[in-house]
Image (cartoon, rainbow, N blue to C red; front, side, top):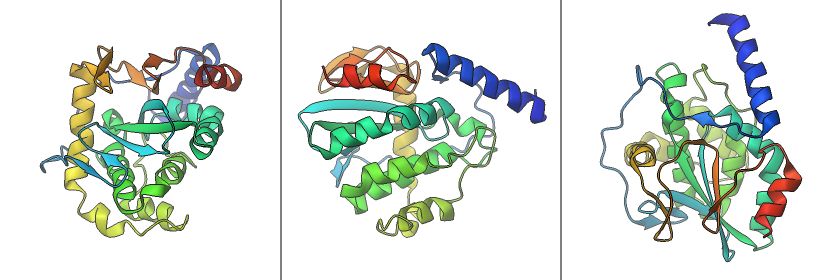
Length: 236
């Protein structure tokens, strides 16, 4: 269903899904024309990146919030638009530790540029080189978010989103980000094989779609477009 008509129908479908609160970007789909990272995946911890745990983190609160997302997922963008401020405020006031798990399944929707993988690697670059700015860069990925079916942002544009915010220049890191790209793709494969564990405890068999949000080991299943409902769940 190519062209303007197909894009319009997709937008209507997204709006309807968000309205009923069950929306997510499906991890199922073809894998044609998707670049595969060939480097050895990054391991260990570095800055705000916990490569073994599969996430980069923001904040140091006692309550743990784990969020699986894809930078090209429009439903993730809708979730961030509605609930991003709630999460950011909870990070900033010391209530939560936000652990971001970037996935790459929508590489298939970026015309062979591997955008989701490259965006995940750029986030890892910030986590390593400017750990206190992880949340800022995550938010920047969803500001004027590239649409599915586009090429996504170039590497130069990904680096510029950091420098525009006064974040350390990550251009060189992006050029050498093969291990981070491989790490993100390995996380995506694991999200489908499972089990999904948080702090050593199984919370899900697999990730069924994005965004998936776990708060202190319990999954949020409410509406992504209801700020009050999500804030109430977060505050329990």
